[in-house]
Image (cartoon, rainbow, N blue to C red):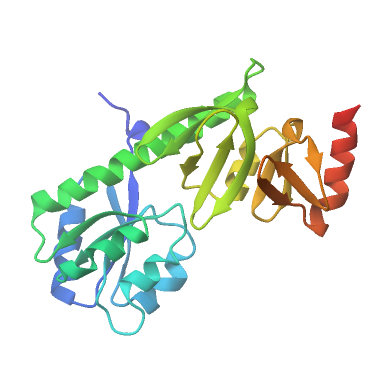
Length: 250
């Protein structure tokens, strides 16, 4: 039997300006084990301050609401929160996935459809939890080469740290640019990965870039050169970068 403390739980909110639609989703949530309803709102504007706190794992979000729409709110939601859109208008489907929605449901939603979407949320949560624990283990390990587990889409991928040239923020994605391999994208913030990467090997050089100091071979006009790519070194980070570079070159 699974222990209670090991049970995967998802904290969720519902945002819908239609009371009947909100009530239906609330009923579905309450009958679904491990879904914990911690917020319900009748408009995106009302929900915004609470949603931006990042306290929710999942948001059931209507799209066509007066004032701030679900699509507009979706673009503001923290990267650690996932969305399941619920709407009567299928023409919004493509826009929904542009803001990284887990799924998209048409009203009226039945319970099997609801559970199909929620299963994706549980899979995402499971992989996120695995990523966190594996990252902590890898960070503590003294073995070489050091690695971390990165969640890319719905997969966990082992990332060898010595293969990383640099990490960059690109839109709402974090991109690992690797030596001899294709880039790997994930849904994390630069701060989150900065806390995981070993500080003796990686340094932030710009608000959007972290570089592997061992891979830096050419610096030109306050830019790091990786082939045809130029990584800017901001004034804020220049002194520490040059100090680290001198240490690394000894």
